[in-house]
Length: 343
Image (cartoon, rainbow, N blue to C red):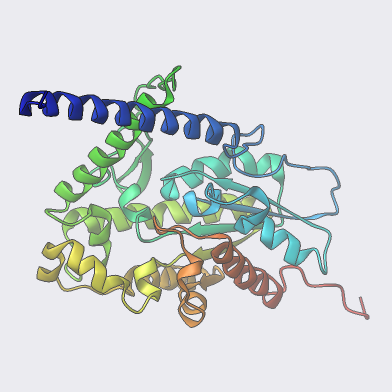
């Protein structure tokens, strides 16, 4: 008996449904396996070993920054902070404590340091700034996130804006696929919102725009006021501040910026200066007598796709390269100078 077109359509639908169920089941299993291997956080809530604050004579370094410092995509022992510690360990009894908070900006980093400086009592604070989105993150007018604290300037003084109401976190639930789908939708919506805020360009990219709008000018003023506050509390604690600038991938890759222009055609209508944001941090540090390290040169000189993961963060190799440059800067600035024979 011949099979009708209607029956063929029916059987094809059943096969497609079974394939979808099998695919979702396999995805659910992979998510549950991944959950068992999720990144380990210490008791402070950071992707870093449990702090060992014993021994007053140890040379302790506190590294503060955003998701680059957190290094959630690599194992704890491959993060920039831990790799700095291993390099320093060749010459010193040093401990590196890392405070990495995604999307922190200098406002978030200031609050981290206000809380943990008295506890860690470091000799050096390494403030890792990412101009690619820190200036955006510091502005309540630019950043689209609603669940973070912001500051404004009132007659030249920093004023903390009221904290937003705490939102209850969503539980992954029993079916992890549903939670993962929701997470991806949220990421997609956030990206679309950033592109909309930038009129076809991801909003944070506008920090490289040669034309500086009033909102961006204000964001820079807040950024440097926050950095000045950080400098003050670090100095008052008896520590030395080192500011390290993290470059964007498209600042060090020969063709990454061309790929961005192809992905976001609206970028072709703007004049860009990819060096200005890092240079502005360097100029502020020079005026403020703060040691400064620009990682752009190191990453450009040794560029390889292996230094980054697809989302633009560092791979373990990228963390290693940054750690080598920072450790060298610490040595060359005599932060860990060994006593001379005459002392």
